[in-house]
Amino acid sequence: MSVAAIKKYEFAPADSVDKFHGAQLLYVGWEDHLMFCAPFAFPLPPNMPFAALLEQVLPPVYGYHPDFARVDWAKAEWFKSGKPWRPDASKSLAENGLRHKDVIRFRTPGLTGIAGSCS
Image (cartoon, rainbow, N blue to C red; front, side):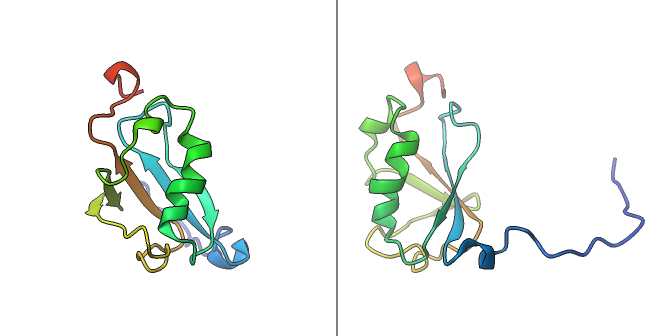
């Protein structure tokens, strides 16, 4: 059932990029690993190399999952806003076209959670 507002809602968003002191939010999710029920939000500088995301940011978050040590980043399949996407690890987040509040997800072929359970 749809809902119609009786008045117009106009307000400045509380999470606009100017509130992050030079960083921007990037949401990152891991497909087929429902132990992590939603993408994580990271405040990251736009000039951060994509390789740093893989090497420094993701390991402390996803590293305790047994599959993470076996991730082959060269074979990972990436999605940006639900569409296939191929990042360049040598370029920055901004150079890869990532903007404030973008959502990216990665799938790791052959790794589908604990005992193939997607968890």
